[in-house]
Length: 223
Image (cartoon, rainbow, N blue to C red; front, side, top):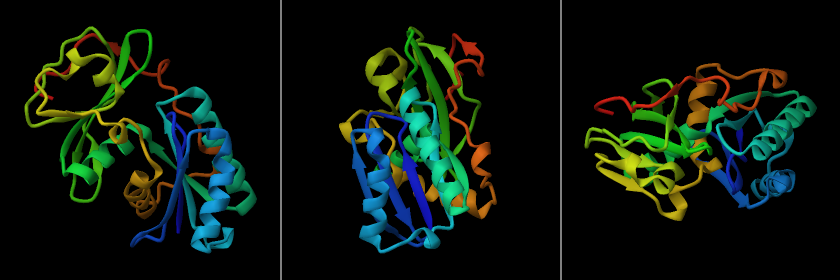
């Protein structure tokens, strides 16, 4: 049983899955209410801490405050329940959601990073989950997109800076497509668990990224 926690954006959510299906999911606009969400979720599903095998938490990129809260809650519960934790990329969650809703197998995610910059990452469906195709890049929001029409786009970066979407087959911008949801973490978390990628609670850290990646002023040709 995996408990998924997503607090990287303006809407926080949690989901619970036994591997074959989602058991329950719930959401709230305040990351500060995440413990209440988890308690309500477990009660709804009739599951106790003993029934949880591992926790999964989105680690970014995303809002600093939300990421800190989500990671801290996941760590605290993992220590208390003596469980391990799986770190999930919030951009992969967005890509997974687009595949789940629309069947898109090639997805570029663009997330507003402020300072007129955007986090950009590409994912391809491997038959089970959306997997990363390139290193995450931090690009100028003034850069015009130069993409193959095989690719779809998602993320608030394309909404904030429409020029970035140039060349894409389509761009998903509805309210339900703008945010990562815990329910869309489920397949990613089960793959990571199967691949034994769970970590000790103290090893999970928010991935703020800005200081860790090299800024690029050009998008990759053909992606």
